[in-house]
Every structure is written in structure tokens, then in C-alpha cells.
Image (tube, rainbow, N blue to C red; front, side, top):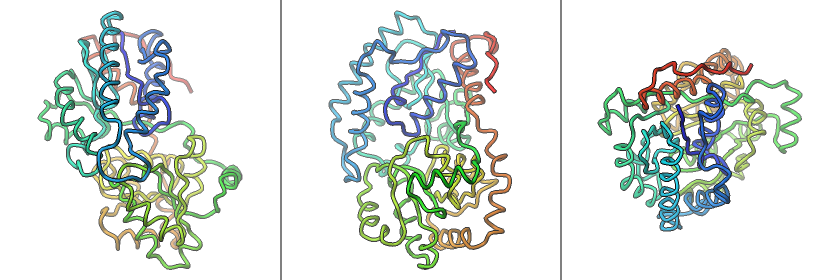
Amino acid sequence: MRVVVNQLAALGRRTGVGHYTAELLHGLRGQTPDGTITAFPGPAVRGARQAWGWLRQRRSGAGAGGGGASPGSSMRGLARAVLGRYFRALCRLRRFDVYHEPNYLPLPCDVPTVATVHDLSVLLHPEWHPADRVAAFERDFRDGLVQCTHVLTDTDCVRREIIQTLGLPPGRVTRAYVGIRRQLRPLAGQEVRRGLSALGLPPHYLLFVGTLEPRKNVLRLLRVYCSLPEAVRSRWPLVLVGGWGWNAGDVAEYLHGEARHRGVRHLGYVADADLPVLYNGARALVYPSLYEGFGLPPVEMLACGGAVLASTAGALAETVGGQAHLTPAEDEDGWRAAMSRVVTDDDWWQSLRRGAVEAARPYTWENCATATLRVYRQACGRPSQEEPAKPLAA
């Protein structure tokens, strides 16, 4: 079995889909013989990394900009068309058995196709996305699904949405939970203190990790936090980690005009190497998202042994609901009470941390790769145990 995986999302600065792509590729290669998994584009496509990074920045719009279409739509369409022709020719030349598109919209080709649909937010909530992204999905998404032999998704919650919303047969949709990066684990106190000092952070804070965009409910989080008593905010600042997303103008205005004067700090995009310290140093992760396909930061916080305050969004209830404290995303009084309690009630805080690492343990990239390989074999009609797996690294 020969599989080609589109790795464009993993090139340059990575968002959630980029991390998924890179980690899955690593896991797949750890369980298959050399030559089974090919990443596209390879070294022969000069400049792809730089070009795609530029296009992705253009796709997300200009910083905390407005709500219209992001610039560069026609150029992206042209780039995709050129890339698609090259990819189709490559597939014919190399005679791949399966093509995996980790980022929703497959490139046209004649190879049995598996696509990962991480969520349906563009279809169910187009108001959370730029107009050109919505248009691209309306134009290409359903045709792409017709090309797909099978669809992967990250949670049972989204699997049900795909079956119900898109009318796909249940046998064509498989849930494969994503994994946690190995470096996300509990750290010694001295290491955490040293790391926080290097980042210029205090020893006590609440943490939010995610892109600053409407779907993440950040404006409500800021307003609720700023309504906490000054004595709480002065001891427990709120640290935001994540870059600016589309249509975040209201968040930017409130952050700079009000919240930063009331204990909120925005670090922006941070290196992956800094995340373990940030999670370990936080009193709790606050994650009031309106909708998620999986919700990686809450699971990552559990893997570091931390306390999680999350919304009741379906995927979050599925992945961390047995361990985290859940509050409806729109319940401002509930969020205010939870944030206040987690920084003042040590017994409750410790109860949220107890068992956190164990709750996150099933979410591994090895498990994700194993489930994905089963789908590949099904897609190309091969026996489920066609090839011996390599032993997993310790």
C-alpha cells in the first residue's frame, strides 16, 4: 500500500490542522515500512513552504481585521488550480493507492481519497468565517466529498453532524481521536518557574490558548474576567496565547481599550516549546468556545496535570467532560463563578487536577495513526493487516 498525504497545512506557522498533519505523518511513518507514506509536496517543489505560508497569512485576513472576504482570493484559486494539476500528474506517475487530505478540501485526482473533516463550522456557522472561505466551501466541499471514498473526523460528536448534515452513510465516516504532543506533561516546579521567568510571566495566572476569533468566544471571556473583583484580577491575571484570527476587531478594541488595564496580557503566537511551561504554570485553562471539532488545548492542559474550565460545546463535553468543569458558553454568571472559585477554593482546584493526566492518556498520535491506517486499507480494498507494523518508540 502506497499513500500520499498532503502536508501543505504543516508547512510554515502551524495552526491546529497543521499540527494534526505533522503529528499524524510522524505516527504513520512509525507504524509502516519505509516508502509506504509519501508527503506532498516534497523537496522537488521548491518554494512551496514559503508560498503556502504567505497564502495562509492572506487567508486569515489582516490581523484583527474586519468581517469581509480576506484578500488574495483569486490568487489562491490560481495557486490551487496549478497545484492540483501537478498533483494529479504526480499521482498517475507514482501510482499511489490512497490519497489523504488532512485539511477538508481534497485536490482533484483519480486515486481513492480519504479526507479529514475536523468540524462543520463553515457550513453550520458561516458567520464565524470570512466570506471567501465560506464561498470556497460552498463551491468545492460537497464535490470533494463525492471524490472521497472515506471521511475521517476527530470526535463522535462531529461524526454524527457529518452523517446527519451531509447525508453520508455511517460506514463511510470514521472517528479517530487526535493525539497530544509528547512534550506536554507535568513539569517540575523549578523548571516551570524558570520558564515563566524567561517569558516574563508571573507565577500565578489564568490561561486561554487559541486563535482570537468569534468562535472561541474570547470577547465574552474578557468581559467576564474584567467584571471579577480587582483583588482577584490583581493576583490572577488572564494570559491569552494565540494569534489574531478573522473578524477579531471587537476583541482587539476591548482588549486594548479595557482589558489590558484590568489584568489581561496577550502573548500572541508562541513557540511550541513554550507551551508545556505555559500550561504547567497556569492555575487553570479557561476555554469558553462556542463550537469545537475536538478542542485540543483543554486535553493538552489535562496532559500537563492542570485544571480545566471549558464550555459545554459537544466535542468538549465528549473529550474532557468527565474531568473538566463545564459551563454553557453563553452563561456569563456561570463563568464568573467558576473563575472566581478556581482561584480561591484550593480544594476544588485540586479536585479538578486529580486524575487529569490519566484522563488525557488515551489521546495519542499512535492510536490516531493506527485508526487512520485501518481506513487507508479499507479505502483501497486491502486486508486490514496487510503489512507488519513497526514497533512503537518508547
